Length: 136
Image (tube, rainbow, N blue to C red; front, side):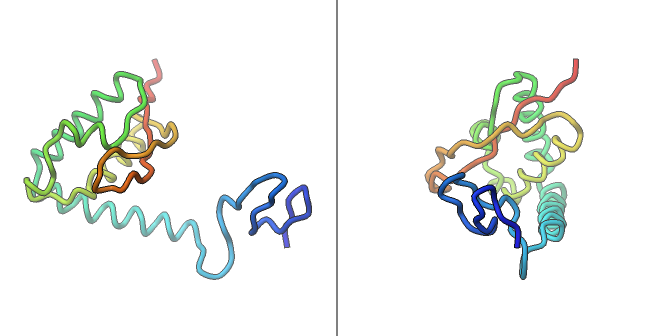
């Protein structure tokens, strides 16, 4: 068993150092498999969007590139406020996550934290913040 500096099992919350385990381990936890499943799901959503809604996909990619160029933090909310609703174009709105991943892998953006969404349908859930990652 691994312990924190206060001799508390790292799988539990230590009230002194207030740390939670970043990546739980044990039965049912496999970070690498979780990442593979995430990528597989995003690829499926992206494939449906690219087949059925190429105009929506192109507009979303252009908006991400524009926001990255400002070098200010932005989230998916900042893309969806300008890009029309995916469902109106026959696209799966989950494909937006795949576009952010694509931009991250291409070195266009980097993760910059979290903020709560203002979209009522998303129940004020956390959204990733992104920032342009241009090496100039």
